[in-house]
Length: 449
Image 1 (cartoon, helix red, strand yellow):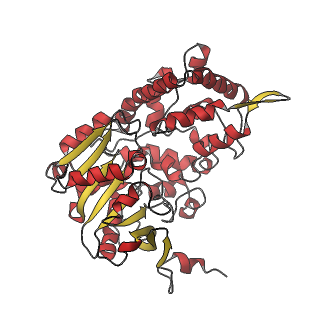
Image 2 (image 1 turned 135 degrees about the vertical axis):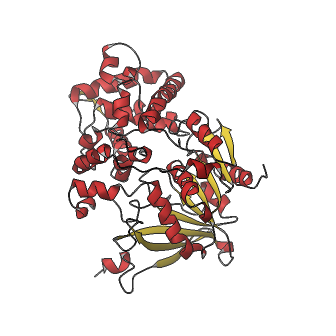
Image 3 (image 1 turned 60 degrees about the vertical axis):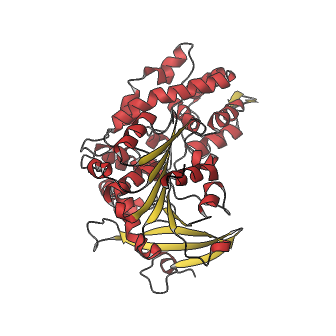
């Protein structure tokens, strides 16, 4: 019989602390660490962190510098690569790479509807999740770095929310960094969540307009689907209640390099003819539920707005409140007229906790997090202004997920940041551009570009 505790818990004698294996061109090692849940209480409760070490097969015996990758999100585990695709192949030319599952994600003591009841009720769950922001993630990195590098500073690559964490790293523990690379993830240092979404909705509207200019046939298709959803209130096969607002939120894909095409292909096979009349096709429902469900990343929905909480003001469902300031996004009003339906982007709303079966048990926990007022600062403007760590950042022109003007304002506030502003890629440029993007940014940290 499997001894689950012995496999998962390093405090159990004989625990599996690491396991090395191979894929084409790489050697992988699973690594596990214990860190304090609250770094201000190191003698208190611990949680587990998981990370996958990756090194090129022909360099496995070499003493290489380290690069730690911080995934976007919040709420997503690190990429599960096979071999060395995308940016990883470039990194492995000179680094050992640590793909860290940030706390609560992947194999790092996951936080979801199944595990959070172990904490107690919603109040206890909210208190627990308040420790899952960038400040705790950075302190996790510093806690494990001595065991990984022997205490030597490492290079950090932060994608999207991972870039937010990187700026927190530069604010609180720059001594741990040899260099920092940020892709699509320079946050505003002082914006409240309301400011973030006031900037976001016009940006999203531009993306939707561009999509309809590329695929004008989708204007009618989107209206037809929304009208059907309003009339029939369908439930998807996984139990997700598809509302007009939920359908609109499929627009989150528009921020990716292939997002407009992906949305078009989804819409074009939305309906089939049945004996009862037109109905949403099984193929549409299957793809839509995969895009809408938070089952694989519930932490995203729970703490997404909390990543902007700093000034002891509640986030209070910011995206939902601010959306009311942009009535063009109101589906019912749009369908009462003849204008195009506007999709929405990367935002979390209270109705999601009613629609999504993976989130329904966590609705009260989410409400408590939205009302929380004890958020502490994530960034130190004075320390950033005196930064000495080489930093390079890719800023994507009109990025749907991270406001470009906010990013450039932060770049000016952090001493020594070298930016590459480009419209060649969307928010996922480090994936779509692969080695070329990382190569250029690493060169910028060395004044080679």
